[in-house]
Length: 185
Image (cartoon, rainbow, N blue to C red; front, side, top):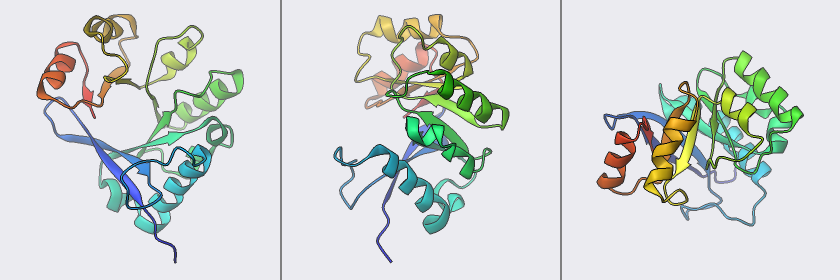
């Protein structure tokens, strides 16, 4: 049997309680994703390892599992292999909102999956995905302007929960909290 490696990063709520875990592919003991690896294969590995080797319950208990999905993974309907009640389908920032992708996301929503948009940047044409999203992840290392961080809550639909990603300090946490973010990673 080959060794299986999975990273698990906590996602906290406003009271700093664990809301979910992002499940991350790791190719070895180094706690990082190898950029030379195919993202499609990484997602497939997370899915197989999460379900078969580790077991979803051992990984996340009664919490949600955020799992990254590439365009190819979405088009092949790979998320449907995982239980809707446990999984948040995290759509990578490289996925374009094509009619085919929008159809898949709509199917997933109808089947009860929560949808998150990763490393969100407001771009024209993404409105249909934004409307279907339950959670939008804002990377605080990319979106560094406090005004821009705050404006996202005012611009985005009210049903969308904002997740502040890469929060490293108490000051960043407090700022995100004050700006209407409800989840923190």
